[in-house]
Image (cartoon, rainbow, N blue to C red; front, side, top):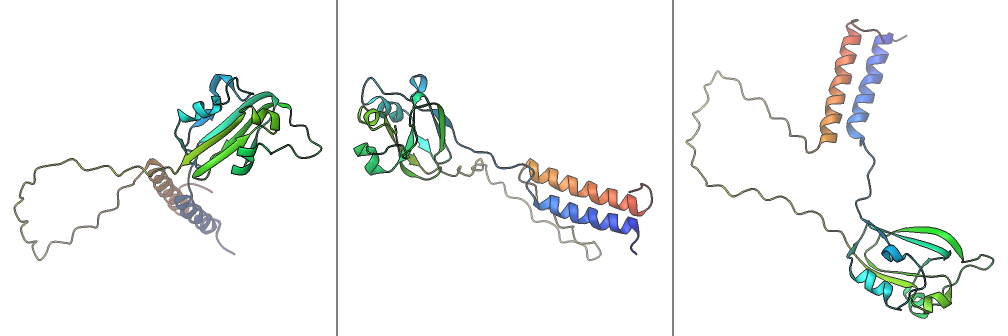
Length: 200
């Protein structure tokens, strides 16, 4: 039978390794959230081009989301044909008229089409076409320009001097640093438990 301290150390080591490789925080959406139509919301517009003008003032990117807020209405994501011909209707047996809101994630680049499920409303301009752009990766930071100052050559090391210790990589972000610190703390606690200084 294994000693309790040895089992504790083994479990602690496995936990430390798992914690080092696991993300500490779940990913968060990076996009913006827009209310379609702004203060007007999603309704039959006074002018057929109301939603065209609203969308023209915004550049939409992948990971952005749009929210339709409406009363006694509905919205459906449709294809290009249904957008232009206003032939998308609510499924049989359901009523398209309701109050509420609908949230859509813009998850692919290209055109996205939305329309009221009531064909009459769509024909009066209650439809929306968005051109969704791919989100660009941030450009790497450029190093500031510096004057190159010649440095004198380093003296040759003495034969009896030890080789310098390899440098550890610098952590790129706080999560990695925290994971590394947590792992070290767990290993330290395990060592204390093995020495009998703390009890598991």
